[in-house]
Length: 136
Image (cartoon, rainbow, N blue to C red; front, side):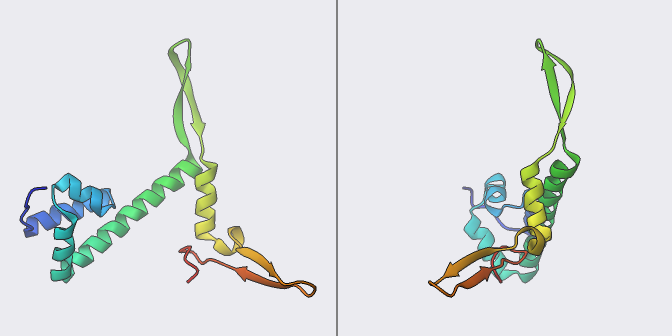
């Protein structure tokens, strides 16, 4: 990769790309810069680091909204008959909808895992993951 100078203009361009593609590695490839240069720039410039974090969060929100749209509003797909398009059918993603429900209401849609331990008198341990899926 080229030895790109990280100027204020470059930082602005990088943050802008990151809002559309919230993946630092991919944006680095598009920008022609080694990710380690971005890491160093973030360590040396707290404002840039904050802008990177905010841009990624914005991008994640955009991806989440697209998942919601596909799950709830559906996506129009063309229907063909004898090689010609004759209309459309709206397809919804049940899998995306399920994942969104688990994320938005984990207590209701992702109640956890129950483990039984011991013989005779039964002890049950329930692991409930919070909204971030990390159990924190």
